[in-house]
Amino acid sequence: EQLLKIKGLKVSADGKNILNGLDLNINNGEVHVIMGPNGAGKSTLGYSIMGHPKYVIEEGSISFEGEDITYEKPDVRAKKGIFLSFQNPEELAGVNLESFIRTSKAAIEGKPLRILAYRKELGKTMENLGMDREYADRYLNVGFSGGEKKKSEILQMLMLNPKLAILDETDSGLDVDAVKIVSQGVKAFKNKNNSLLIITHNTKILEYLEVDYVHILVEGKLVKTGNASLVDEVNKNGFKELALS
Ligand code: ADP
Ligand code: MG
Ligand code: MG
Image 1: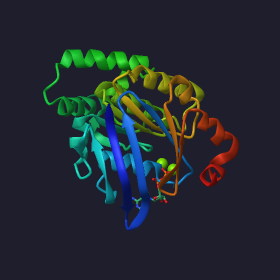
Image 2: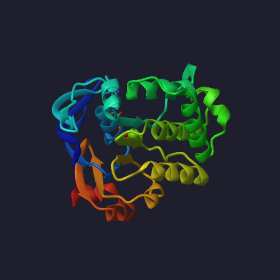
Image 3: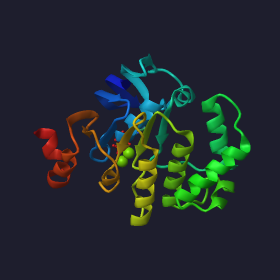
Image 4: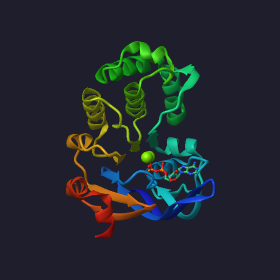
């Protein structure tokens, strides 16, 4: 069943055209990977699906579960079950991680949480991610290392349990142990009813998942789509050659 449908998407930011007519369909249960050179527009695609106000839809449409969300606000999209893990997670002083996730989860579920159950689930999920429980009391991402920020993103994903999780280089800048933990977290999240859109340069995370489609994004367009073997082709030949072939 169709989950996300992107048609002819053109997106600009600060007057610069970034996405130049992009089509993408994601069905329930599928894992899609986006690869592409720096500056190709990968993060912009993630932001556009999430509805970041800086990214202006010039043409095209985005629908989710058959509903047009092209011009919906990010909170509406989150409520529908879309989650974006940022490439560069922002720090938020004054709000601790525990209450940040609790507020998001309550908003998405549309009802207040049962606090004890929530705390228990949070503690268990943090333990699985090898995160010290005291991080829950710290301001969101403030003073977190790169790896801790990425783990905090995965923690949010696991706690919010979206239908579509977009991971923007969540596996970048991590040491080998952290990549493993993050990858296991993503694997634990994945079931037959939810879908993943993974933006990555790193192929380690892909060893933990069954990838259905790999797309190559170059200069704001998907220039090639294939199966998991496309990853090997990228590693061997680079993006330039693929874009031409
Ligand atoms: P990628 O994630 O593939 O590296 P991005 O989506 O971050 O690429 O950026 C694509 C291009 O758009 C880059 O040239 C970048 O400088 C530009 N860009 C991204 N965001 C903005 C913005 N808010 N304002 C202006 N230009 C932007
Ligand atoms: Mg980049
Ligand atoms: Mg990026």
